Structures are given as structure tokens and as C-alpha cells.
Image (cartoon, rainbow, N blue to C red):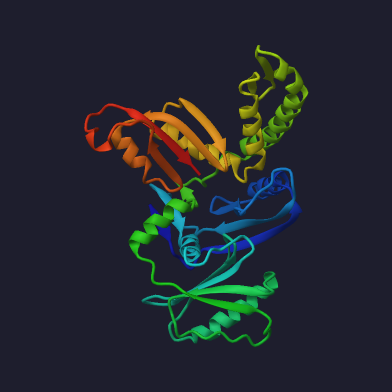
Length: 347
């Protein structure tokens, strides 16, 4: 694992206005075709994504140093760590403008952006007036769309912000302590690396991700249409009715109809179905979990399974994952290597 904190890294953030999720990925894929090996581009996560609606998206582009060696492990950017650290003190939502200023041993550092996107990252010598530089940076951000309010995070209590050009921007000063190594390690579980083994991390490859998004939308529409068509028949029959499409096969009867309808409805309302199911798949594969029963509701996947005590303890440490016993045995008595029932909740 390596965290890059270099002046040679360049950031740019492009706004895509009023487009669908598929349109945003289509633009992203086109941009990636023109990138070099040292350039990375990805879609900035949103607070809420509606598969069938339109909204604004941001594409983050990062230019890494040309002499950067291939990673033996994952490579993270300090700018993303700083953003996540600030967000623990005052939540940074997708439309929030923010700036973080800190004083290191050899220089000042200013990082700024909107939501989870990074617009700039500056190194400044210690002899400059840091309050003046923060003010200049805020004025610079106005050309990217800053108009009303910005959150200014800093461990330096003495900074004073004075805007010479615009007095309409409300600067909310938020004091944060220095980020230690323990906190940094915890934050890395909430962000994605920019590289691993020299290859850009992706949810899926470009073509597969685009096809998967199309497939999900098609499946949801097809299943919902088929369920509506067969609802009256199912309610009067005891035998099973099958719905078969290219991507999914469901067996429905009057006993499971409500559960399947609720499952499809939950998928349609989900903000990040691909990321959630990918996370669940990775956890099941890594810990060799056998799925006895799976449900999806309220942005949470619940998996009924059986685990060893050591696996139970490891699952409890995963960010966004909860695990509880599913039997009446006392945990302290389970010193053998046998398995016992558990419910794994993945958010």
C-alpha cells in the first residue's frame, strides 16, 4: 500500500449537465480511450443515483507522475484521504464546495473540490501568507461554479479569510485535528485506490460495465412488466409460474409473489446496486461464504450463512458490514473450529 503525496499530480473535474447514468458512462468510456497509461478518469460518486432519471455528474481526471513505478500493492491519493477525513467532521455532500488547508514540516498544503471530486491540490512555501492564499484559492474556485458557500477545514486556528472580489460567499470554518496513521488506515477502507499492480481499478472493464447497466435496466423493466401481467393468474393458482428472460429466471407462485415484487422494487430504488452487489460478491468469495438465503431491502443485502469463529471476527471489522449470530449458542463457548449460523448485513 502506498499513499501518493506529490506536487506532480494534476487534477481536473468536468461537469456533465442533465444526463442519465448511461450517458455519463458513455462519455467516460470515450474519454478513457484518449488517455495515456499515466492518466486516469472515473465518475465521481453521487449521494443518490436514479437509474431512470437525469442529473449532473462529474468526471474526475488525474494525471500521475510519468516516472511512477508500478505498484506492488494499491496506490491511493492523499487528496482523497484528506477529503474523507474532513467529511468525518462535517459531512461533504455531492453539491458541497470545500477547501482543506494544513501546515506541514516543509510547506503549506491546500486541497479543494466539490463533493468527492478534487479540483486543485497546491504546495506552498512556509513564508507565504496562508490566509491570503486561502482567499485567493476561494476566488479562483468561483470560475468553476462556486457561488454561495464553502466549507474551510483546517487545523490552523489563526487563519483569517478575506475575499477581495466577492463578499457573497459564506465561508464556514471547521477546525479539524491532524490526521494520524491509525485514522488514515481506517479511511483507506472508504476510498478506492487509483492504481493497483500498475492497472487502474475499475468496477468492471469499460465494455462490461456499460453492458451490465443496460442489462439491469432491461431486466427490471422486463420483470416488472411480466409480474404485472401474471399477477391475477398467480393469485388464483397454486402451481408455479416461470418468468424467463435472457438475463434472469424467476419462479413465482402465490406464496413468494410479494417477496419477489418487493425485491424488484428495492432494486429499482437502489442508489448503487452494482457497487453493493459487487461488494457482497467479493466478501462471499473472499471468505467462502455459502449463501443459505439472500434478501435485499433498504439499501442492505442480508445473507444467511454459516461461519467459523475466526471468519465471524474478521467480518465484523469490514467497513459497512454487520454480522450477528443466528442461533442460541454462546459465542464464548465456541472455541472449536465448527461452524455456526450467522446473518451478514452489507450496506
